[in-house]
Length: 172
Image (cartoon, rainbow, N blue to C red; front, top):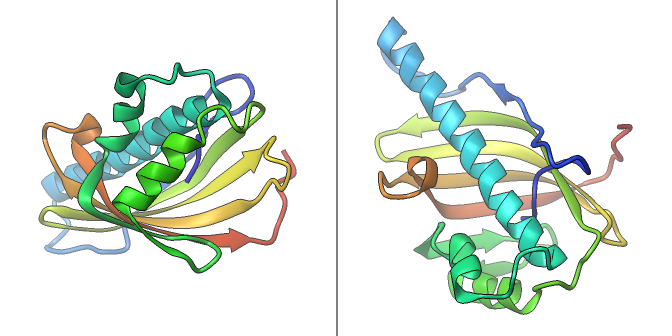
């Protein structure tokens, strides 16, 4: 998990249609799906921008700045890393906090955000994360599970994240 924008600071990503659908597909349901897709995309982009600023050192190393990352994750948050690791929220937060400024040239693009499922308080989204300036430039496919929380940015908090390495390299 790392920050989503191009060198010019613009966020990238598109939201595709939902896989999980219930009901007859009325206009309210379509509006709800569109709102859920937009919320997922906005939260994925937001958190990666926060993370990119933190890892690059562009954000000051303060408790307030770090809290913008930490508060996004529910107490039971888990991460399945692309290397097969399994991390708790506390482990992820400790790693990110210690990594402040360690990747000054990092740039992250978020692409192909898709709402996979929305059911009650849970939403599942998939996306691609393209990193540059990290040395290894490792790209990932990710699936995120969110829990609705009206007090959170975009109304969502992160419950689980699963990342998988992508072998291909972007052309642009």
